[in-house]
Image 1: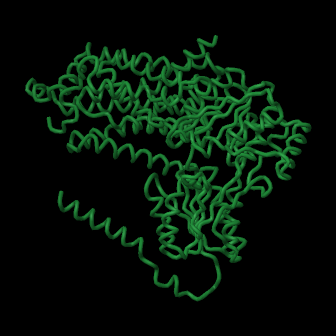
Image 2: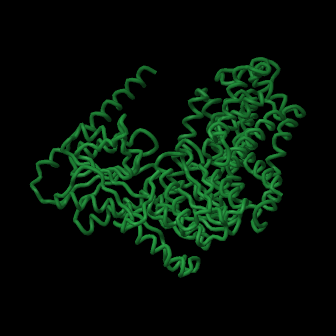
Amino acid sequence: MIALLIVAQVLRISVPYLFAAAGGLLSERAGIVALTLEGFMAAGAFGAAIGTHYSGSPALGLGAGVAAGALLASVHAMATIRFRADQVVCGIALNLLVAGGCAFTLRLAFDSSSNSPRIAALGEGLGSGLAATFANPLVWGAFAILPAMWWLLYRTRFGLRVRAVGEHPEAATSVGIGVPRVRYLAVILSGAIAALGGAYLAFDQHKFTDGMTAGRGFIAIAAVIFGRWEPVRALGACLLFAVAETVQIRLQGSTALPSQFVEMIPYALTIVALAGFGGKSAAPSALGRSEG
Amino acid sequence: MNRLLAVIGALLAVHVALLFVRPGGALAEPAVKSVRVGIVFDVGGRGDKSFNDGAYEGGERAMRELGAEVTFIEPGDGTDREAGLRLLAAEGVDLVLGIGFIFTDDIATLAREYPNTRFGGIDYALSTDAAGNVVPPPPNVTALKFREEEGSFLVGALAVLVGRSKTVGFVGGMDSPLIRKFEAGYTAGVKHVCPECTVVAQYAGVTPVAFRNPGRGKELALSQYQSGIDVIFHASGSTGLGVFEAARAQHKLAIGVDADQFNEAPGFVLTSMVKGVDAAVYDAIKRVRDHTFQGGVSAFGLAENGVGYVYDANNRALIPDAVRARVEAIRAGIVAGRIKVPGK
C-alpha cells in the first residue's frame, strides 16, 4: 500500500513537468528557445481558475487555460518570429508580464493578491488519494503527451518540418517549407500543451495562487535538456526529477542524508548533461537564432 | 539603439533624482500634530489575508483613532522595496514601517542615512556579532518582533491533545531561523503535554519560493497524513494552502498561521496561530504620537496578546472544553514565567 502511495505521489509530481517538457520540446525542436514555459504554465493555471470560476465548469476552465497558454505563446511567436526579438529576452519579459498580470487581475477580480476563490476540479467526487490520482484525466494525458510528441515529430509531415526548421531553416526554405508558419504553429501548440501543466496545478489546489508554478517551468526546461531533446528521454528525465522530489519529501527529517542534497539532484544532473557527459549534447542547430 | 539607451538612462536618472526631492510644503507646514506614517508592504501586498492585511488594519486604525496620516506603498517583486522606504524617508514622514523580515537590511542602511527619521521593522532580524552577542538595531529603529514560539507552543499542545496519534506534523516554508522558531515552540508544546510524542517537521525548500509553492505543500502534507499523522501545523505562507487542501482530501486537521485561516478549509482547520501585526503597527504609531518612541526591540508575546490562537464559534466544536482549559492553563503558565519556551 505504501509503495502504491509513493508511486502515486511520483505520478502527481511529474504531471506538470511532463506537460511543460512536451511543450518545451516542441518549441525548441522548431528552433525557438522555450524559456517561457513558466509563463505558459502560470497562464494555464490562471486561465483554468478564472474560467472555471466564471463558467462553473472545469472542462470549460481547462479550455480557458489552454487558450490562455496559446494566446501568450502567439505573442511570443509574433515577437520572436515576425519581429525577430531575442528569444531569451522575450521569454524572460513574458514570464514577468504573466506574473504581474496574474497578480493584477487577481486584485481586480477578487480583491486578493494571493489567491482566487475555490474552484471545482476535474475528476471531482472521486474521493481522495489513489482513486483521485488514477482517475484524473490530466494524469493520463500527461503520460501520453510525450509519446504523442514522439509520434508527431517522427511520424508526421508536420513533425518532419518542425525538425527541419529547427536544424536548418535555410535548407527548409530552399525546399519550399514556410519556416515562419511552421514555427508559429509549433510555438502556439507548445504554449497550449504547457498550459495543461499549469491547469493541472490549479485543479489540484482547487484555486490559483500567485506564484504557484514555483519554478516548475524551469525544471521542465532542464528535463528537455537532460533528455537531449528526445521525447522518450525527456519522459524519463521528468520521472527522474519527480522521483528525486518524492525521495526528498519522504526522507526529509527522517535520515542523516541532508534534504538539500536530494533536492539538488535534478539541477546537478542537468549541469552534468549540459557539460556533455554521456554523449554529446544534441540541441537543435538553429535553436535561438532569430534570423532564418 | 543608442538613442534608446540614452532615453532609458535619462529616465533612470530622473527617477533616482525624484527620490531625493522633498515636497516643498511638507516641512514648512506649521505644527498641526498629526503623525505622518509610511508603510511599505511585503511581497504580495494588500489582500494577502495575512501579514500585509494585518499591517493595513493597524494603519487604518491609527488613522481612525489617532488621526495619523498613513501612506501605503506596495512594492513589486525584488529591488524596489528599498526605493519605497527611501521615498518615504525622503518625504520626511515621522515613522517608516517595513512589513516583513525581508526589509531588515534596507531599514538598517536607511536608518543611518536618515538619523532623524524613525523606522520600524516587523519581524526585524537581529544579527549577532562574532562573540554571539545580539547587535542592537540603530537607535532610531524599533524592531517589532513576535514571540512566535509562545503561540506555537500552545498550538503544539492543542494539536497533540486533540489528535489521536502520538505523532503530529509540521510543514515549514523556507528553512530559516524565523521558521525554525515556530518549529521549536511547537515541538516544545507537544512534548510538554506528551513527552513520548514526536513531531515530524518538514520544510518546502531552502529559497523564498518555498513560501509560495502550494503544490509542494500539499504533497508534504499528504505524505504526513498518510503516515498516520492527523494534525499538521504549517508556517509556510501560501505553501500552506496546499496543506489545507490535503487536510480536506484526507479529512484530517490543519493549523493555520499568522491570521485566522479557518475559511481556507472550513471544518478541517483546528485553529490558527495568529500574530498581531495590526496591534504592533498601531502600537508603534501610537508611541510616535505620544513621543514615547524608543529604538530597540519590542517583543510581542502571549502576555502582550501579540500572539495567540483562534478559539471562536467556528472551531469550538473541534476543541473539547477540557482541552481548552488545559491549554489556557499552559498559557497562564507561560505568561507567569513558570513554563519556559525555547526559541530555537
